[in-house]
Image (tube, one colour):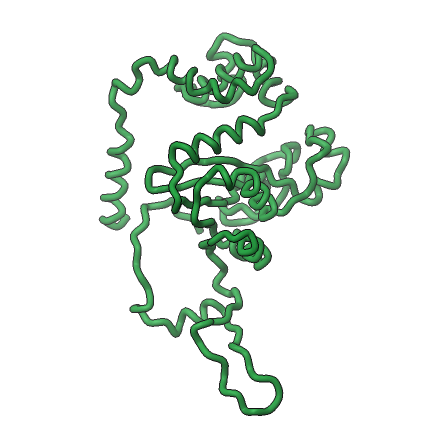
Length: 293
């Protein structure tokens, strides 16, 4: 690892040190923090299960699954499992409250909304949405689920705001498989980009922002960039190196006077890049990240 990245890593690790005073009255403060969320739950046992689950996620339990968390709190697992997996309660108001709080406490006019799909490797075929598909984490096609995440970043901090589980077409049209896995009837196939636009429509007004950002999976299809433009959103999206573009700073070929006037030529990004000078670029330093293929 380069020295500059080691320095930045050490700075980040230093920021992770927690003073003992932070833990004073932490349980009471956690309960107060949860009140705006649990107030949307209609039954007292749901509030209790939500509290148990969050306490478990923040505990030193090694395996953060429902069974381990229930046993840690001397509870039978079936009640907590039912609350997390099968109980009929609406999580939309809780996610909206999260977005509202993020916007209120971290929001800035030049904030950035970030969209990013992420995969979860799986062994079987029973989990909702699992199939052999591209996994960015693994850098190959593998058996996995895919979640599409919405994050928010400002000069103060960054936070996850919302997510959607991607349901592939084969899953969406398989009634028996949907029923067995408990997929709600109203859930239909939506592309990953459509899921991003849905989250933006629901949460965008709660999050002050100037930009939409994403990797090349987000920037690849023209229609997503067009949709953002039609919504009046400014965006910074990576695109694959073979994407065809027109350089608007370059004029069209000289008109010969015959036929239609020529237009600016299409060219791949990598070809366009080769003619740029080093002075055309501004270098920025980013933090050390996870190495992927």
